[in-house]
Image 1: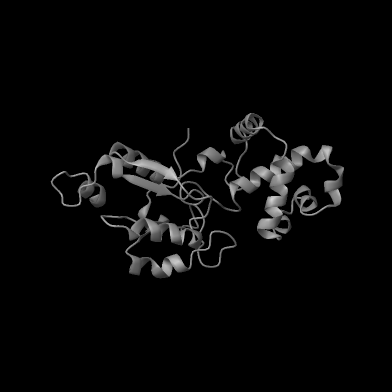
Image 2: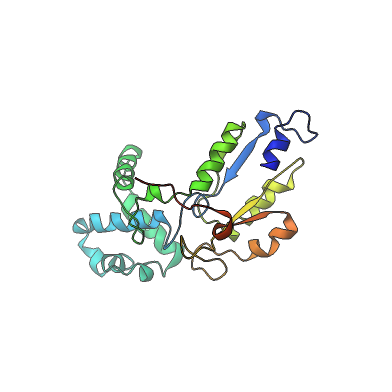
Length: 221
């Protein structure tokens, strides 16, 4: 709030014209949850199960066989290559309009395996408030990262905060095992090592979910 109040005050030497107010965000684990795996992967798994009757060969072919057996950990053991193979098999040949409809149908009905919430309910209430606050103060907001509030975003934060004028860099630290998940350095996804170590030197804020957030998800009725 201090930052926004400073750069929107026309009397401030750090005033930024509305045209220069830009905020960029990572997606997974910054705007919504990413555990136990990225939600995009869970969508792919559901598509494999749905399309399996048309692909009997998947029953004995990895990584598809493991998905059909419910062993997603093994299915992802092949890393990015395995995930891309599954994405290509389930998405190829689909028009943009068809894909949009498939995703729309999925996102309105699919539920998270641990919480039972719709994936649209797994967004972070404090981040929704932040987005609203920035927009109300003339910021344009963008998602500029495919996924992971992690060391994979280190360069994005470096670039954002390296320019002239007032800049603000923030990491979200997942340290609330009770209300969400606690993970950083040793996580199988979304590892945050370098970011935690270098944030103080870079002047970046590390937000603790456990101590800084009064709520995690939006209230549902």
